[in-house]
Length: 191
Image (cartoon, rainbow, N blue to C red):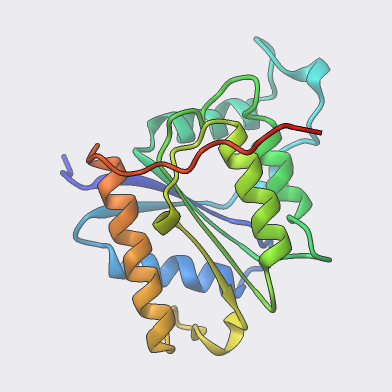
């Protein structure tokens, strides 16, 4: 039995050799003494969210995805930005968890790594906070120009990015250990 914390990693990119997947590999290596990182690679297998299919008779792929989330001590999401938004497959997966609340009080680290990334990051951060994910200022990060900062072999080649990622790993570690940290508040729903 491993004494490492179980982290479910989700890449928002569906490309087989994406920069976000390479970043997950780098984080898994950097955190290998603390975390056992399990990559969820089934985003494209999840059916389109439909509230009529939710509940006790949810599709099998959804039941499995929800169980992976429940079993994890924390979640790492690395995603690109598509057309200044969140990739549809990633948003679809998260939508399937709203009613079943797997993200509620779950420690989450969010990295948006893209050409730019700010718009998608803000949108996804708001979604994760409104569904009660546990996040801190240090457990979320935007990495612009990712292709020049991580290699195809999963090595972070930019020293500033490496330092930022290490801080994110440390922040996620504190959350999964249950240390007292200042959580980000949910977004305001004022119109």
